[in-house]
Picture 1: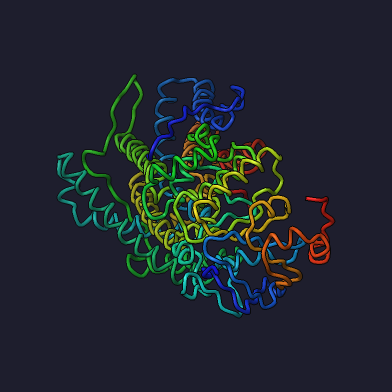
Picture 2 (picture 1 turned 90 degrees about the vertical axis):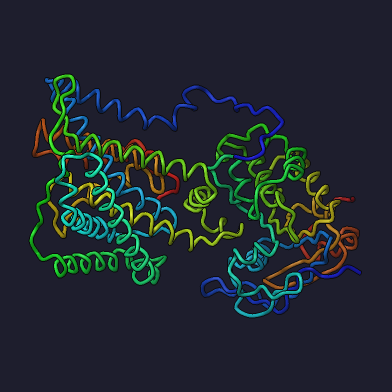
Length: 240
Length: 343
């Protein structure tokens, strides 16, 4: 049994006058990859942003590594060891690739082993090291977004749709890097619409609908049950 | 700056035009200087006006640089920025008057020491004012442009009235330090010493700001914060603290600009800050919101344009800068080197 690193209990989040999350209960086990799945508008991105404190919860408790983090400002949450890759990647276009990574290393200079890991996973970042990040392609920007999160070892990585809008070859590169990260024992909570990628990476899965978690369990169980997928997410999968 | 990659970096295949495109605004300054040379028949007058324009531009840059960063970082429109210019001028001039024995001495060292003390006092006072201004006036109105305009304009009026209370309602005439008076002759052109010093100070400040913004971590945080403050927070940096730091630094620079501007005009008034804000806003807009480099180029263009036009057709001096702004915005609607998109 894996020890939980992140727990959400009865989390409600409002954006303006709209209630988006309706009492989320979720546990993310340490050292596992948990996929957050669901249709568009189900509340997946809101859940990640709520954990990061960008949209603070109205009610409920969020606990990370044994300490309550709900209500803390985003910088305090990040410094507890949570790396965040937002849906829009959040790249600083005016900064070079190098500067983006220096900034991401909040606790000090970048170490050689982490940089080597990043270059091995994403060689394009070494190629365009001194180039403004705004000049990178969409796929390279996504690589940089993930590289920023992993440039320092963190307790938890929140990754929002890393494959969105990317060519299959780039998705494959991304998947290899994330598998490598997983092999290193990283804990990841990832939103993903690409079910094939989710199946390849996920250990656990949580399915959301209308701001609620409607199913949790092993990713393998969900991947093996086409009827369950169709019922939960409206997916009609080709045979695996 | 950090560990260099072992892989050999190479540029993507961009055409020469594509690579030069971001730097096109840099060509505008020499282009305007050349246009001035062609329009002004006398080369000596042209040289005098060019140095004067550059000096004016540098002073506007000093005042505007903090404002563009404040706008970029927190989307705050601070109409009260002019208050720091006026206050800086009054504090600086008061110090210079107290140090009359140093400013009147025929010693460059003593003159510069008095000037430095005046500048330090002005920057300290306006920096502290900026801190209070941010806490009391700006902080409650984050996110609302209309309220920001109203409340910072109110802050400006209060500051001007405070100047009247402390220093009286009359303008103060101020002589420059002894060794900064007069002019020198270069290629037959008469160049005021003070203007050359102003060009030097402005250029050194620009290089210093660039070094901080490009070569230090706090500079990276500021540049990234101008672009995407939310992401900077999600990475673990307290953007509000950085903003306060930039606001204080921007206010102190405006104070420095006030001292320089006061000595340039040789007269200070409580509303001098408000008057110069028209040019400052033009510079911030044409430079591109959040861009120190754009602000620098914009300030030089405005200073040069103002001086050339004032010589050729004095009635068109201010209109010429508005025409310059219109022309640049038609070419680049977001300004010359925008870091953030105008909202």
